[in-house]
Figure (cartoon, one colour):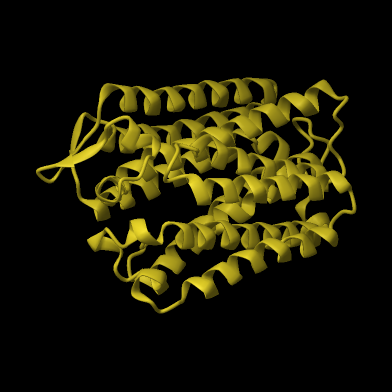
Length: 334
């Protein structure tokens, strides 16, 4: 939830300063609108994930690992879940209204909700991972517009948005199409789901997760393009004359990219042991490192203190929520 909620926040943050290297935003001046955008993101997350649970109920029932999920276990009824999802979608517009009255912000949020609903309702029948990633890109754009500082006539502003949106889009695409398809390969197959992974033949055989060359190539291509965009972003944003910031950005991105590559090597192979718990822990570390590398690239715009806060919040939130709900710090029960 914290990562989803930070999507519109980061979109706004990048433009709340001068959107130029060496002039990072003063977050203390904008805490209230950023907090309201965070609430918008939280409600969007509730909508998307609860609707997804509601839509995937029959598929989830086919998995032995998901018997404790609230809907599968019958703790919450399908009608209650649907009411929560719809209510959260409607409520997400309320905090946004206290940040901006720009109609484009509401249009973008509405489109994000529609795209998210399309994925939730049809994503097990047709591979729609691009639609889901696009939904979050629209949420990011909502934050950009809500900042009131984005200038579509500025080449620099547009290029920064392209870099930021591309990195977000690629991370969400990989997370859902590749990692999501891998962790759900057993019950997706049992329920006859037509996800991206299922279509490309990802399956479980004799306790091993078997992946074809097409699936592996797709995942590695997404990562390669992401690293290329990350390198371009760093080259564009850092000022070589500011040695301290340049060294800090390069060192942090290199550190997190190393974690990304190490964890990637643990699961992007033709055959890996299908241990769902272990896979989820590895995915969690990989995604946190990817997010951290992206935020590090934008230090010239957001500053080191803001970067540290953006890094700490989702990590602490993720670990605390997992411990509270599932008694496993790095393993969500999904």
